[in-house]
Image 1 (cartoon, helix red, strand yellow):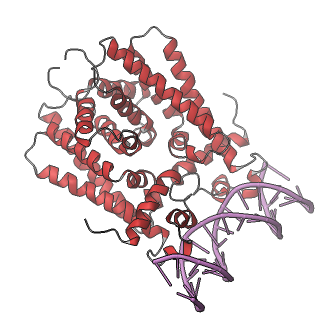
Image 2 (cartoon, chains in turn brown, cyan, orange, red):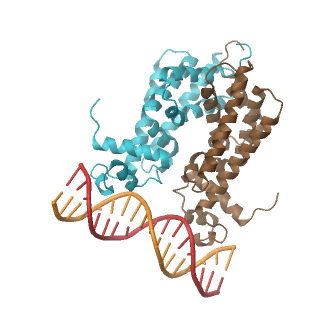
Image 3 (cartoon, chains in turn yellow, blue, orange, brown):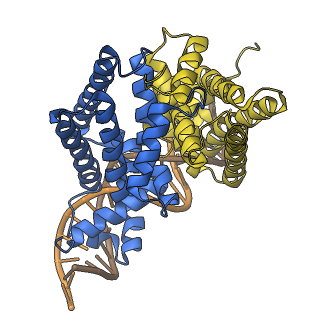
Length: 192
Length: 192
DNA sequence: GTCTATAAGTGGATAGAC
DNA sequence: GTCTATCCACTTATAGAC
């Protein structure tokens, strides 16, 4: 836990404002004002507004890629892998709800790193889909359309940043358990 | 089916660009260029950029409110009501994927109508939660945390606009059935 | 590390001709 | 209904003093 640099503080504050207004609507004056300094002073620590966005998004995207790779290396069943993916999203999102807003909503404003981000996201979705496909083959998962299942689970996990801040009383372990229960076993009482 | 006015065409084109770049990043010059005219000419048909956003978002928010009220008036079981809500989202989103992007991502840029929008959304979520709570009481729905179930289903439905355009081959009826299956019954094969 | 001053460009919107 | 010309507030970013 090294003490955060001024640059770290700027990025953290920017992420908060990006969540509230989006990348384009947040001005460097807004950011400076929130930091208690003038806009020009920001440039002693960062090179551009674009650099801030890149730092926020790429570090998160790489964390998800790394997390999924670790899960793939395990010997878990496919259902258990999905449970680990839920934990991964809850964990990363709990630590950085502001940054997750940018990852979801502002990636299209990336300039130099847009293609790299899209590649990471594309690969992530493919790895995720593979787990579902293998689960179907293995008779662990119902044989519905795999894209509908992928989309459904991933949409919920990607939206966590909107919801976690409102539930500060809930600990990540318990939230992960409940989410896995709902996403994997459904809400229908029927036979259970 | 009345023929669309020039104003309708402008709003439709704006919604498309709002989806690509967001409200703040889309300029009136972008919009005019996409329409094949000059920016100044837009103002012969609309009063402001803000008015365009309001028309897109408020009409959609009111359509959801109306749709849910109709479902509430029915004598369906709570599980069946959830299935109808899935159909409602698939139906509205299929007809206006561009507008749904603004509803989800640009509502914070509403000026005069922001509070009205938030009220509609708040009421919608409460009605939705009530159906889940009644379902739990009636032994139709598992007794997990109702907010986790609400959040999970609603996140998926609100993200449909990102996904429906990529699946033009799938008809709304079939998509609704598959979504209901996944969201309500889960993906776990277990006892089934 | 923060400031003032300012450059250089872009934004939404209006006036008035055709 | 669309155009050209224009207003002016606001944007990111830099230069140089303290």
